[in-house]
Length: 368
View 1 (cartoon, rainbow, N blue to C red):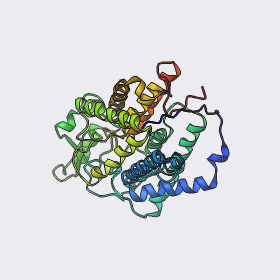
View 2: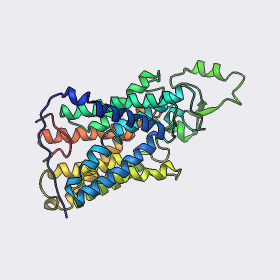
View 3: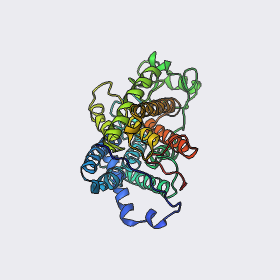
View 4: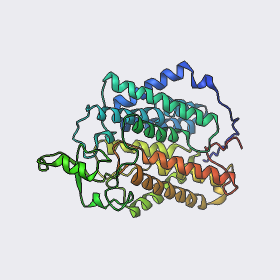
């Protein structure tokens, strides 16, 4: 069975009432605080569970679409709200000295850690939850040509770095930002050393205490087991293929994303080398859908799967490039998958606008 939807043209206008709706604002405040209490990654895993449930329910009964839209991608579990709120809360808590989990990287990157019930930490999560809700809602209202939820996650991370005094990029300690070889060589720096500390400052900080100073890796790739280009490309093709197949088989564009997100429960529990693929599977599904537009995927046969694999590969490589610039040398979690989804979804929308792709999948196209 295969069902294929179409994207309706959306009027481009701002609804201030929706942005200031007290019910939605209260829910977004609670959603962001919930992400802080639970931890960004555990909250996102719940997003995955709810997406799988919602998409399965919709497949069985089309009237159940609200489970995905209102809950999984709404104020409760939208990554722009709960995940972004949790990531911002971690950045704040680390800056305040609340986090001491023995994390290998800077503690502000420890998105797997639950942050508990400190009122100020929950308040930070709540505020960033509302910010994510506004970005997500405005993006939809203006029919902007990308994934609005992923944009909320991405912009939120930029804002929390600026708000809490973290450097935006950090200092590359190899041969440029793309060089991950210091990590491979296990080169270290002082744990408390900020991302932009100069060589002179580093020497001063370790005078008389180099042997006992706590240290962190000089370069911190987002995933120690998933940063080499060949491996990233391989998992991009594999997961992109699966995303395309799941969409073509069910017509549910977010089911593969939900499966990928839910699989991160194993990563959160400490199982080594679990790949992160939600940015790949969702773009595999979206690329396949955009390729056929409103036509049944069976009309193009295996080509729809190949196209999905290509878009999965693109998203995987974009995510890796982003982490090398904005994650590996800095101090907080700026989510590479979210950035990859923003950029790849924008590519899909543009390719549709210029006539290369038959559709834009779930991406708006500025009302065009």
